[in-house]
Image (cartoon, rainbow, N blue to C red; front, side):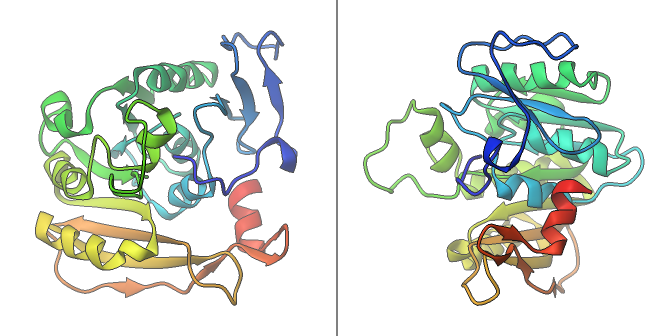
Length: 268
C-alpha cells in the first residue's frame, strides 16, 4: 500500500524503465520500473500510476519476525514488497502473498521470478475474505498485513481505482481482515500489522474480539516532537492478555535526514 511516505528514485534507488536491460531477464510493461530495494541485491517492479510501496511496508517487514521454517502469508500484498524484504530478513521457510487486484498480483510475481525466489515466495490473486478456503485453516505461523487504512466513507471514491482499493476499505474491512487472519493462523501463531493511530482503539478492540491478543505495540513518529502517524502491532492467536509498548520509532532527525535506526532498516 502506498501512503506517499517513501521516495524512490529521489533517494538514489536504481530505476530502470520499460525497454532497458539489467543483465537479467525481466519483463517491464509500459509505465513500470525496476527499483533497487537496497538489500541483498533485491529488485522490485513497480508502476507509480497504481501505487508504489511506502515507508509503512519497510517498517512492517522489519517489525515482523518469523522462525526457521515458518510458513508466512502477507495479506493485501500489493507488489509483494513485504514477502521480498522478509525473505532476506528472516529464516522463514515459505511466503505466500494474496492480492485482490489481478494485474498487481501478476506484477508482484514477476518481481519474485526476477529475484529467483519462486521456490520460496508465491503471489496469487484472490479475495482475502476467501483466503481460508484457498490455503486451508490454521496453516500459517505468521500473518502480516498492510491493509487499507481508511473506511469507505471517506468522500467520493472510484471503487475500481487501484489507489482507492489500496487506501479505502472498499473490498475488505478491519473486522473481515482480522477474522480471516485468525482462520489462517495456527494456535499461537503471530499476527503483524501496520496501521494508523487514529484507529488504534478500534484495532485493539477488534483484535481481541477476533481472538488475536495484542502483545506488542510501537508508535511511529515522523519527528521526535510530532504526533505519531503510524502504529505497528503484533498479536498472538489465543494468547494471554498482556501487551508491551516499545519505545517510539522516530523517522527523521532533521528534514530529509533519517535517524540512525531508520537508516539501518533501509541500508543494512
